[in-house]
Length: 101
Image (tube, rainbow, N blue to C red):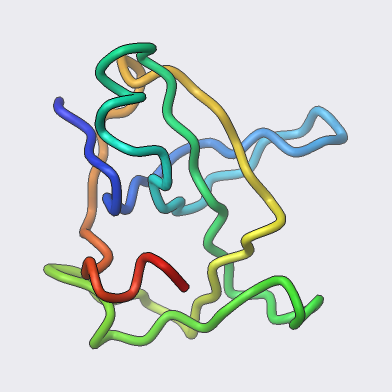
């Protein structure tokens, strides 16, 4: 599956403590980097609203073809790097006008 910047992916997020948990993530790496290197940088999406200085709320009008089941937040301080060939479950896309947030 071709992955693009702004895609929302369902993936096992690896946390600094070595544990993983299924979460959504926003692809923030640009398409040139994905194509050239095969690496994908994702920002964690969660329903937890702590550390408000590092997140922003995602509303339904920011997303194409998907609605989160709960109020959700992009946690800009929690990033994950993975390779694009293991990503297989795209669920939606952040609108271009909202990616810069």
